[in-house]
View (tube, rainbow, N blue to C red):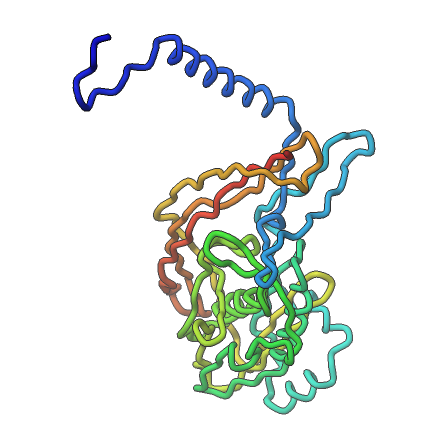
Length: 337
């Protein structure tokens, strides 16, 4: 039997290579057939959430749209136009029954005028996010910022400990969302950021999230982390600014009161770059048999944000707010075993 030269591999038989090709084509055909025949479940970001302590996946709650429908559906995780809004005095939940503390503070510092108010809708709270928002809003309500003073959000609502009433809530970590103590309080920072911009207060420290959020457009969010990231602004007016906040009926309200007339402010943003996200396929034994579920992620996006500020009798002024880069959050296609 002839020997092959040193270093030369034994050639694979043609029949074996043909069998491999046939098997590969068959696998692709079966996958395409399976993906067409198996119902796909649009899903919220809930199945992306992990418990930081136990590392166990939360069990998602499935709801059927039709009693006769064999599949289960969850709403897709995407931003809604009504998830955020600037509000008038009549739209605030405390207008008809104003708290005594708010009334006294308004009289004390003469901050009777509503300068700006912003609200975020929390349609799908995770973990005990609502507890964190109520706790942080209660700490924030009644804060008075004298003229020229710098406001620090962390110094008011932090530290984020159980002793101060905080529980686990959603937090971005890498390309996942996990449960951490006081998770979700960034909605306080984002609301206050939008309110401060509308009041033409001087923002001196603000950080965007690592990935886009669903409740405000890119470039209009703010995040905080105790000991690392804060949201701060200066009261650049000649009179005090009073903050009031409340979480009620699934909405977070933040309002600024003062003695001055705010300008007309318009937000503008420009998308500078976008990189498509990718899809990860993985098995999930918690899914109903014969179903798949698509968890929508986000593209990587870079945006430039600025505002136009117009005081009565003066020309509009454009003010740059910076360039923010958001990492991609992958789509995840889960399938039942």
